[in-house]
Length: 484
Image (cartoon, rainbow, N blue to C red; front, side, top):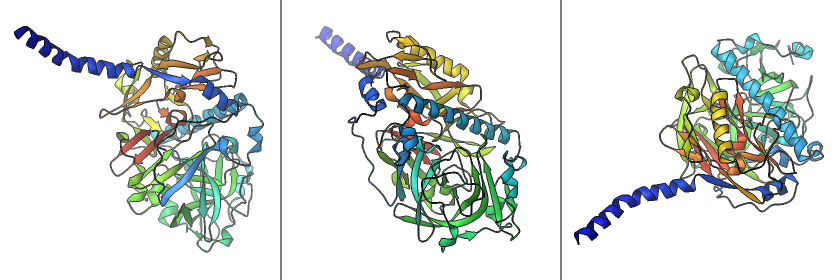
């Protein structure tokens, strides 16, 4: 009996250890459905796994990717490979703009010292809710879009949703220089709630770049670092998102606009600065919002949602960090990355914000491909390659240096990539969020990229199919996979 008792005791002590090992083993590899991804790349209909959908609330609007937009015929005529190349080109401009903005901030340079390179710019001395989120590839501006009601009576305008910007704006008549957009250009004279902001008003003083017109009204200018800009009158106007009307929202009425915004009427700033749309909401609904970014090639939509219900149960939460030099971006406390169940050897300083405001990791809706400091990227890529030796490699494509020819495969198992956050939370990325098709012939690439900047960016390819929440009440960023 003593021997039997000893054996049972030994097994009782050992079994939890083996249990943990078995759980960990399940996270070492993830399966990528190659043929399903290629059918989407070829434009064929594919049944997708059903995701848990949040109940539609009054503080909620549809959100769609630019590839799903109606009326964007130009890009539909391009091949999948050509559209991917366009996306990566736009992505490079986006990352350059973000890094430029951070560099100015940490060096104490005001954007008022900068001017867009345009001769026409100098002529402008006068003159709880929810919405669908769509992907923005074919519109030529941004990646994800939603229709926002502007004015009273409301006129729906297709707007880019951007967590990396604070000032919201739309193109307005009369136009000094306006680009082509999907909807009719907004006429503020037809709205009973449009009101110009005075030069001495506090709202005008909060702008990075402002001026005063001859009639004493505030002029605004926003430059995006890649040559894109908008310039015009700063005003307050009523915005309607889903079933919720929000009065007196500070918004730019752009009469001179140029850049990467073709198709959209303007931009809804969702950043952390004082002039962003969430910051202007007077109650707690504005302090908490979330979005789920539908797959880049999906024709479906998800939602942008505000209020406490925007954070689903079971979300993995991570501390939201602040950069004292720049309040626009949402920094997340990333502590490490694991590949195939093994933590990478990356210095803690790589993901931290230093005293000067450099470094850190932001979550950005407008950047497509996640950027990591070169040393961190090299470690991640090498670990992925080591776990994918059985896959047939091929030449790199654009900024991707790790690609495979999977044309003969139905599905493949690849090492699981996991983001680990301070506080103990972790998020396993679906394989389709980091091994992506770059053409319709079977070339797949590892969708991360190195950056020489100190700033790392979690891009929207890695966020797809995940409800990402920003809770400024509790200073948390949340991630909930398959809860769109």
